[in-house]
Amino acid sequence: MYSVSNDKAVKIGATTFSELNYKESDIEELLRKNIDMICDEEESMLIVGKQVRNAQHGISDLTAVDNKGNIVLIEIKRDRKDIEGRKEAFEFQAIRYAASYATIEDPEDLVNKIYAPYIEKYRSEFESGPLTSAELGNRKLMEFLRENVAESNFNKNQKIILVASDYDEQTLSLLG
Image (tube, rainbow, N blue to C red):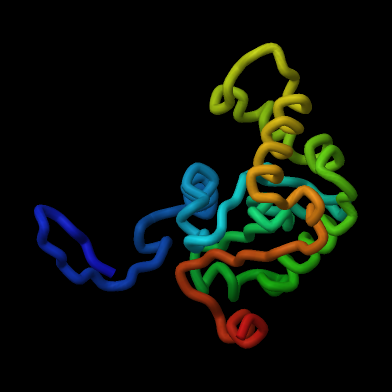
């Protein structure tokens, strides 16, 4: 990685979120506002939820829909130390949360359960108008799916993205 200033590139060393004094909530907010940071060139995502509680009372960090219509679970840990300090393995937690998203049947179900409450919480970030949070959520989600020709593929698959500055061997072995 390089730091670029005044047409001069200086190589910088790797650092962890912990070393930057980032808390998990800081990383979550950074990604919520800049989701393209973890998308490749052919991918886009629409954030539809933050700190979503599932039926088993687990709380997922961020929830999105990608340009293929998949519901995407984004789980965040600062670094290896946070991953290793967990009672439940990072990747198993994510799989369990993603499985709960498989029960979402259609875009309206997603809006009612996840996106409308998210819009309500962050209403000032959305265009204000006479629409309810559910109406606005339906409109924005359907526009996103139509733009990406993904309406017929909605939630056929779920996707998991694990975010950390470093991973433990167990997580890497399962993802490899």
